Image 1 (cartoon, helix red, strand yellow):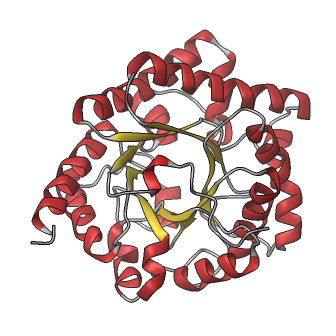
Image 2 (cartoon, rainbow, N blue to C red):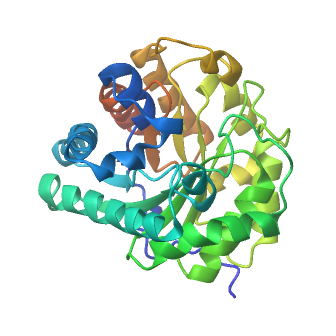
Length: 323
């Protein structure tokens, strides 16, 4: 296989255009709209009319935002918990998970056609970690991770998604397994790492070291990397010293809150942070990430956060454009 990144067919990796993506789907549903989710499994909402209506209410304003502001959009399926491990724990058979993952792709594709005709929309099959996105848990091997994730990656590959995105990944080994599964399935892959307040992965690995390790271990490396589920203050210093590896990070989905993952786990109310401040911090990240092309949010963020982030990044691109 080629060592080149499998990104040639991705419209948001070939130029300077800024693409938006969504925010904290699960926290928006649970805390802002009182929608109960078992183990944060938003995919179960696809199984009922009321659930699908809640997902529409979440996704449509983002697509309309992209349409109205002239940005492209990376549209993630609500399938963070519908991999083989979590699906089985929630009582779903392989056949049911196959149907649900395919249905999720149809659902978001139909929304994009309805709400954002003419907008460059990248359909992404969303993959979550085998365990908790805040806790690396017991060490895993890349081989075990590949075996575990090959099922969901394989299903997405049959649907015509533009790519798969693995979100809140906590170790280089699991990221490697996912990237290898995607390479074998012939679908571009994006890895988004969770980091702690010290900028390190929950596994203890450094962010830059993890990216380099995954790239070195894969015949077809990820198309690019992202950072998510942490406040910019938690990882900006790491990016400042990332050297050439910073060019491999194209996306950020930050938390609104500066709280640690342990603190967030104990919260009974939603910490939405300061939208304007968060947006300004994103604009600052553009100086540290020369190829930043995807911005959105994670825990505690919503449509208003992403709207402010888009405005700030437009201002930042104008201010820092070469003379």
